[in-house]
Image (cartoon, rainbow, N blue to C red; front, side):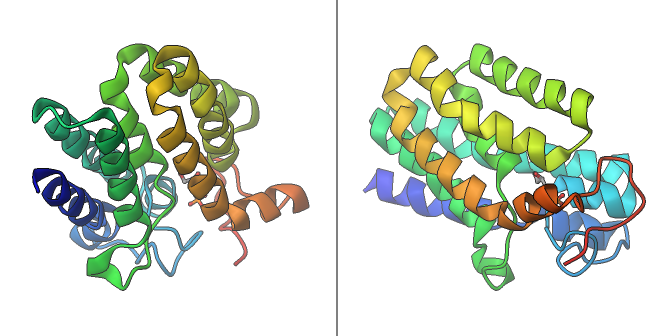
Length: 198
Ligand code: G3P
């Protein structure tokens, strides 16, 4: 019963779109209809700069970390911890409070993986930072980091490889428009003023 409750709570917490709420607070354009049309930290950075984007990033990470940590302290089964992480990300992608139109869940997925350990968190951040340093593409960095996440997880905590692989597939699918733009050379780099074509 407690496991079902945690699944529902994780989904509801994931459904709180910080990108939309922070944009309203800072009187920025709606990230769902401006920039890349994605309610996420990258797009809020594009539309409003570092301060609101950092708030979105921290909140979105916590949306993943809090329910998984909560479930861990409630001593739920490892499989259930994985499912609760997936539920938080599904909430972010398909938020019940915002007509099921959500983001790509990169930060939230990262948040769900943090309780596995700092080594995994460090590897994922290093991967993201390395790809950004070389290419300046936020989406490509996220795609590379999430693609390596199952491998890192399998090495550090094999038990969680399956839910992490599921998250990787979901996140890659959510980046279909970015992947198209990357191949056509139309994906904006971090700091570019141009907005992505829709
Ligand atoms: O984490 C989202 C990022 O990978 C891409 O965001 O706004 O460029 O589609 P965006």
